[in-house]
Length: 349
Image (cartoon, rainbow, N blue to C red):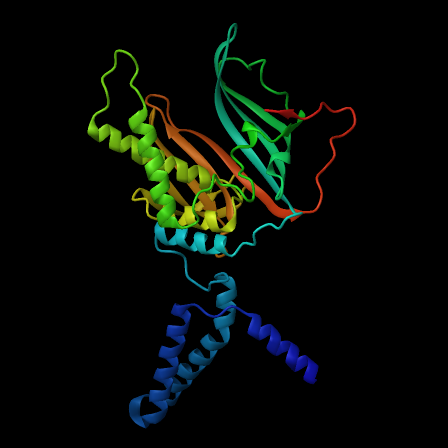
């Protein structure tokens, strides 16, 4: 019996605490019940019994509420800034990889692209690609990627002959094709402090935009255009970093915290990722080279685990176009796969 009671206590102590809202409601009901007890004429016996039942019932349900609302026990964020700050807190709790460990990322992508062919002309196509990454923490340059090409859909034009046939499996070594998945210890030496990170990215954006020379015969951009280009570059860089499933806990937290300060960020509570999972997301809108663009970062409700992203663009006269990615699994493993016998050697792209 003693062991059973100790086990119950241990399990109870491990539960997350209640939310501030649930605690406040419980205190209000308990206070009202106490007042009713001290004041005989303040209400009927039935009313006092209902107060006591409600107070005790809510107190007993507080642990269940905490479990249902997530580890932080909080309610749904009120806006995109709060959502991204919650996601930053969750990212900071992740464990950094240790030497000898290998980061494994399993994700599926849906990419829309324009392909030009000498004989077939211009084609708009969408292809699904399943990607698996193995990135050694101690040797990111030794990373290996396995791609499995999926369904191919043509929107305009003919199917380009350069596109991979659905079902094709390909291996790649570390290179430009895996640049959108940073190494577990990388990040381009970016600071893990949100203020310093935002300052660094803004300084890089200003240098890049101001050093860009206009095309021959075109007028230089106005001061307003330069400012908008800088803001677009800052937002685009932060969004690209946020789409990375594991750049390291500190940097990822800083990126999400910095994004929470973007004035065009809005929250959506009914987003679905590419894998069909329901999520809560932050949509960041910015002006791209061919019109407005927006990136939607999707998180698991309650835990704020990153599920994936969608990128939508609105080129003039074309309508909304988009690409998407879902992170199916991210974990540490101890070994990398071997390329099957007979398969082409992995190319460095």
